[in-house]
Image (cartoon, rainbow, N blue to C red; front, side, top):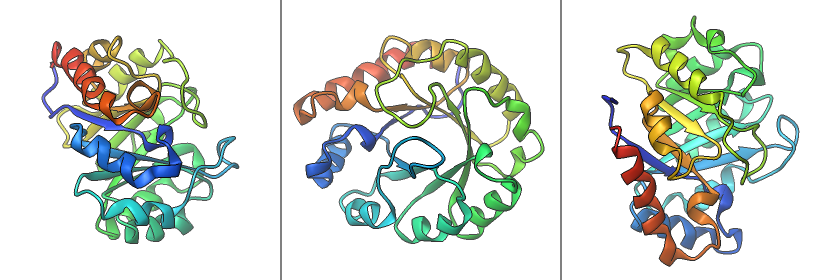
Amino acid sequence: MITRPLRIAPSILSADFARLGAEVQAIAEAGADYVHVDVMDGHFVPNISFGAPVMKAVRGLTDKIFDVHLMIAPVDPYLTDFAKAGADIITVHAEAGPHLHRSLQAIRSLGRKAGVALNPATPVSVIQHVIDDCDLVLIMSVNPGFGGQSFIPESLTKIRQAKALIGGRDIDLEVDGGVTADNAAAIVAAGANVLVAGSAIYAGNDPKTYGNRIRAIRDAASIRA
C-alpha cells in the first residue's frame, strides 16, 4: 500500500525532438503528473540528449512539475543553470561525484527539491547518511543512457530496500527504466510512488495514444495503491 500520491512522469527522452514543445504539451494534456527530463552528457552515460537552454525553451508551455534527472558528471557546475531554466526537482546521481551531500545542499539552496539517483549496481546503503537531505530517491531499473530497455527484475528488491530506508520521511520514491502497465503494480507494491515511462507512453509519437497509455499505467499501479 502506498501512502504518497501516485505520479506518472513521461520521459521526454522518447519524444519526437523535431516537435518537442508540442510533445510536452501533449503529455500534459493527456494526464501526466510530471514532465521527466533526462539530461545526458555522453560522458557519465553513453549518449547525449540536451542541455538547460532546450529545457528552458519548453518550460513555459505547461505548469506541470519538471522532474529533471541529470545523468552528467561533474554535475555541480550545472545545477544553477537547470534551476534557472525552470526545474522543480533536480536529481543527481550518487555515482557522479565525490560530494553528494554538497550537491544535495546546493540544489536545496537554489529553492528546488533535491533527488538522488542510484544505478543498478549501486546499493541503497550509499545514501543512508544523506537521506534526510533528499526529497526524492530515484531507483534506476535499467542502466542509464538509452531509452527502450527492459526492466531489471532485481530492481524490485532494491525498491523495497529504498522504501525501508525512507520510512516515514517526506520523500518520494521514483523508478525509471522499463516501466510499463504490465509491471506498474509490482513496482508500486514494492514501495514506489513516482513512475517514469518513456517508450511505454511515447512509442510511435502519436499524441492520440498518450492519454490511454498514461491511464493504463495509472490504472495498473492503482490496483496496489
